[in-house]
Length: 107
Image 1 (tube, rainbow, N blue to C red):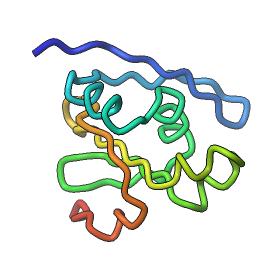
Image 2: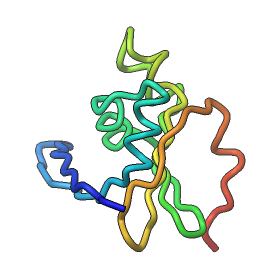
Image 3: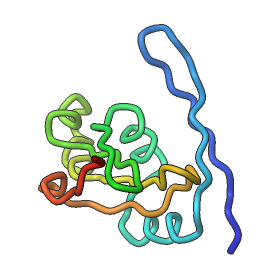
């Protein structure tokens, strides 16, 4: 399986830093199937709620986080990005507005 490399430049409180993740073919396939754009992924990584699961890191764009984006808020709400915590690969992306309740948190 071929993996591409993606870099998002994020700016937060006058501090710029790069976040690098490997992106799987499965991630791109699901992104296209579900109508999730690269901009939406970048916004979810930048402003989404960060949740640690057992072996994964999740970025969840909840209603509270999405409302700052006006017209785009409805499309952004519920976007979830799954990143494997050890390999730093973006595994998949999906939408589910009530999703965080089902995460098995890291102990």
